[in-house]
Amino acid sequence: MTKKLLIIAFAGLSSTMAFAADLYVRNGGTGGAYSTVSAAITAASDGDRIIIQPKTNGTAYVENLTINKSLTFVSETNYNKYFIQGTITINPAAGRVVTISNLSSGNFTIYNVVASGPTTGGRTTINLYNCYLNKVITNQANTTTNISGSTVSGEISFSHGRVTANKAQSIYANSNTADTSLATSDIEIYGNAASFGISHAQSNYNFKLYNNFCRGVFVYAIKTGSNNEITNNTIYDPYGGDVAPFFINLNNGNTGNIAIMNNAASFVAGVTNVCISNNNNATVTASYNVFTNSFVTQGNINQNNNSGSVNMNFDDTTYTVTGMNVNAGNPDVSYTDLDLTRNDAGHHGGSNSWANYWPTDSGAKPQVNYLVTPRSISGGTLNINGSGFSK
Image (cartoon, rainbow, N blue to C red; front, top):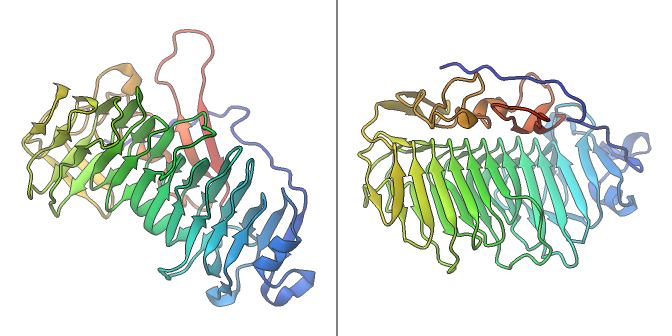
């Protein structure tokens, strides 16, 4: 069914940023600007903004960048990307915040955005908005990565943060080293399209995977005692493989809870015909999931109200699912759709509906990159959490 986005205006959703200084980068250094981004970084101080002019005909600034300060990078031309042909390395430091908007890495598979190492004595925050990138490799200890509205031709590999409304080959929450300066928020992966799937192998945080369209969800590690959610995703795998589309195989010895709910799924049975697999190291609850496949599980799973052999149609080009997923999710009011009807299983259902985040370019308007709205309130204060960025 067609969903209508609930729009509520309230104070405090956005704020005006103040920057210490603006430094300009333009082709040939015209108008007294810097001719290279590297020169502007060298001249900048913490808190400055570097405004980059896109070159004519999409020509690149050919340079590798090392960012060793808290800086913000934006395009001088609204809604147009600047092209940097090179690897962007972000050096960590406690309290460092690097924000990059409107960057294009071009069609080069060797240039990535990377964090060069772990942060000591605090956390590094990396924000990537409305970018076209090859890979994002920021899975370092004590690093938060928030990426939204971006196209990533390879993987997004990060250790903590919020990943919303991106198209990527794969999304992988992981870290080789445990955090020592813990973040206060969960790992949140909302409203993405991941052609190879979404994986989680982090031991420090709860995770929430909401309203994604992907080939599968694969969990290899969790935080001990954590409560984790895989909710309202659409899983479509027309190729088949050797593991279940919901694959829980904990290998770090930790135990915790994983709720798998309100998902719509279809896959070609290859080596296995199992829909949900658990190697019994996690406490898994599966409810109100619908499959075009016969509903088959493996391992210890608490089940209720799941359905197999359901008539649904999937399209991984338009990112749609239609059919008997409509009104098939949990009927509790806390899971209702944005139009306040019963939850539709799949990525358009619930408060974190795909409709919150897509299309990512809605007529060159500012973009929502996070939205949580309660479906009901009995008294007291109505809390709505949201954030966005301007393209």
